[in-house]
Image (cartoon, rainbow over all chains, first blue to last red; front, side, top):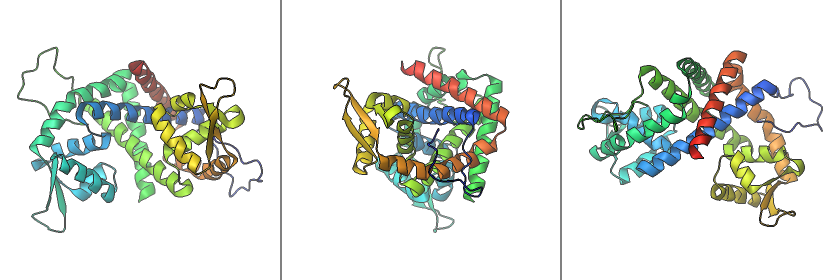
Length: 167
Length: 167
């Protein structure tokens, strides 16, 4: 994203922002636009096909892969990249629709589990083919296997940075 | 995103979903997680530093690059990847904070322009260094120049697909 310079202030070495150069600018703009557009395209598809947001779909998919379709709320917050309070709101909405239920962990009552219901699994199963087809159309089939490997490597590098920055 | 199979139905060639293979699955998961985590990290930074969402910041930055800091609402909707109705809500919020104002296009009254105010430019200028530093830390400095070129190429490919799919 190009940003206006601050010409009124003499930059000191300690304070001067390191603006992006041309190549970096183009790369960041393209990546930022792809993120925004892709998120929006997938939100539209999922909303239309399943009445789910991208993060809601992701939460149901994560639960579907666990033994007993069950996960601790704190772990689910981590894998869906949500704070615990945001996840609680999201799970409450899914609970009202009977797609998920919550109960205290039997082995340690301090923890709450989220559990995918049969209705939740049914909705996920019904919406998965169209969602995967959209992901293929917009991402997977747009890239060669080598390009896909590059994209994965860059994504993993970015995730590492975010996690070490937050920690 | 791994998704449950539908074992109860015999797949016909016309209907069988083309699930992602292992490599594709890993790449898509990493990319999807990077998108969600990065968006969230940048939203937090911008909210804290400027009280702006990622898309609001992007809209102000786009306006700042135009002659007269002015853009038609319809064009601004396009470059921010928002529908016109979503953009209207966003611009209304920014207008209440006096960061943007709207007026009818003088050359063609059917169009409405959005104009960045001096206060809007000030907020953008003040928040840009921290935002660029965060983008550097999490993306640009995490990748080599070659990796950044690959990321740009993949992003442009994905954008093309989204635009031809929507068109």
